[in-house]
Structures are given as structure tokens and as C-alpha cells.
Amino acid sequence: MSNSSSLTQFLLLAFADRRELQLLHFWLFLGISLAALLANGLILSAVACDQHLHTPMGFFLLNLSLTDLGSICTTVPKAMHNSLWDTTTISYKGCAAQVFCFFFFISTEFSLLTIMCYDRYVAICKPLHYGTLLGSRACAHMAAAAWAAGFLNALLHRANTFSLPLCQGNALGQFFCEIPHILKLSCSHSGYRREFGLLMVSACLLFSCFVFIVFSHVQIFRAVLRIPSEQGRHKAFSTCLPHLAVVSLFVSTAIFVYLKPPSISSPSLDLALSVLYSVVPPAVNPLIYSLRNQELRDALRKMMTGCFSVAITCLFFSVKCCDEESHGRSM
Image (tube, rainbow, N blue to C red):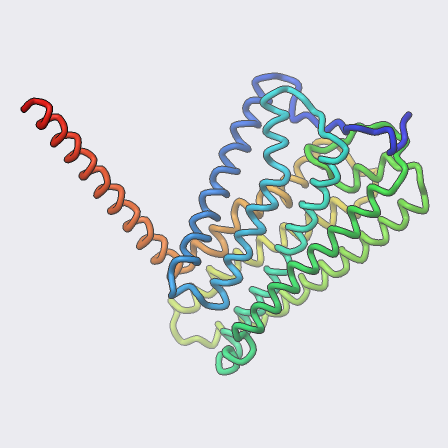
């Protein structure tokens, strides 16, 4: 038995005991993380470089890509490292940093998703007021509020969780440092109730944002059904329904993981649910929220064409220089 002052590291959950399965998990997570990094990196580059994307939605997409990159880089690299090197340890300070960064990026991301839903609601249901309600200053204030709320939420949870005395060992039943599994190691009932109260407040705020998102989508669907063009209705529904599906998956799994009773906990269930809300959304958000946008696709196509042209030009000149140099030597 040890207390938190003497703990130097935690033991994370191994994905598998067999070496072949550990390597399989490594390559799977590597593929997911590389796809997320590439997609979000392309979105950041396109929004930053193309003037046509300097709009409120483009600004929020840029912020969303930053949170996606941050959240997937917080949990996945350590899990990949442990699978590759057949270890399960993470330092105490590393665990505290992981809890803070994960809560920071996830909280900010959901706030941004709520703001983006509001953006679509105003654009479709109140188009005449769009310039007034979503001017450049209003967008900057909303984005700043999202980042500040995420930072405050992460700071409160990190400070309270790692102030608890831990006397139930150091083994966490999860592939990253997750607050419910850290609380299981606590021997302070008052601290446990305090952190559980903070989680309840966060869950209520999360659910309130979810209710707002659902209500906004209902209003959007009602407006879309009045569109005379069947193609326009199909485009709106094909955009909004995936948004709602991803948000519903995130909210349901996150709330269940953090508020479920310990009696229904199991390593395989906890692992599957945590992957669903921590790894899947950052990986699919670029496809759902960004790459389905026609303007963004056009900007990416233009950027890729320009990069390809520059690469061909550089290759041509390098070959030409080599030919001239070899010709000069032969003379």
C-alpha cells in the first residue's frame, strides 16, 4: 500500500498479453493517429492559406482541428509506446499532465462543436442576422470562451484528482490516465465525493450542450424540409445527421464512462468505451465536419495541385542542373 506522496508511476492497462496482438494494436493506433494528423494538418493549412475559408465556420474548423490534434496526441502516443516496448508504466507527473491535457482538449472540443452547431442554426434558420450574430469579434469571443472554459475545467479536475491520497496501489485499468480509475485508488471519501461532484457538474453542462445541439438540429431539419429542392434537402441532411451521430456517440460514451456504477465495470468494456470517446471522434471529425465541405475540398484540391506543381518544377530543375553539371565535366 502506498500514498500519493510516495507514488512515482502508475501501471496502465496492457492491450494484450501476446506480443503479436501488442504489435497489432501499435500498428492500428499508428494508422489512426497518422490519418488524424494528416487530415487535420491539411485542414489547418487550407483554412490558413485560402482567403475563401476566412469565414466563421472556417475559423471554428481551424480551432476544432487544433483540439483534435491535441486530444489524439495526448493519449495515443503513450499507448503506442507501451505496446511497442512491452511496458505499462507512466510517471506520476506524466499521468497528471495527461489528465489535464485530455480534459482541456476534450472540453474545448465539445464547446466548439456546440458553437459550430449554433453557427449552422443561424446560417440556415436566421440567414439575415448571420453577419450581426457571427461577426469577427463575436467569433473570436466565442472561441476564446471555449478555450478558457476547457482550461478551467481541466485545471479543476486535475488539481482535485491529484490532491487525493492514493492508498489502493498504482494499477490503472485503462490504457491512459482516466479520472474514474484514479479515483478507485483513493482512500479519501470526502475527496472522492468532491471529485464526483465536479464530474456531475461537468456531465450536466455536457448534457445541456447536447440538448442545445439536438434542439438546434430540430430547428435546422424543420427549415430544411421547407427547401423545395430535393438535392438541397439531401445535402443538408447528409451534413447534419453525421454531426449529430458523432456528438451523440461522444456524449453517451463519455457520460457512461465517468458516471457508471463500479458494479458494471470490466476491463474490456472500459477499454472499448474509452476508445469510442477519446480516439474515434478526433479521427473522424475531419471527415464529418470538414472534408464534406465543398469549399474546403476545393481549397485542398487547389493546395495539393499547387504543391504537386512546385514539386514537379523543383524536380525538373534539379534534373536539368545535374545534366548540365555532368555535361560540363565531360567537356
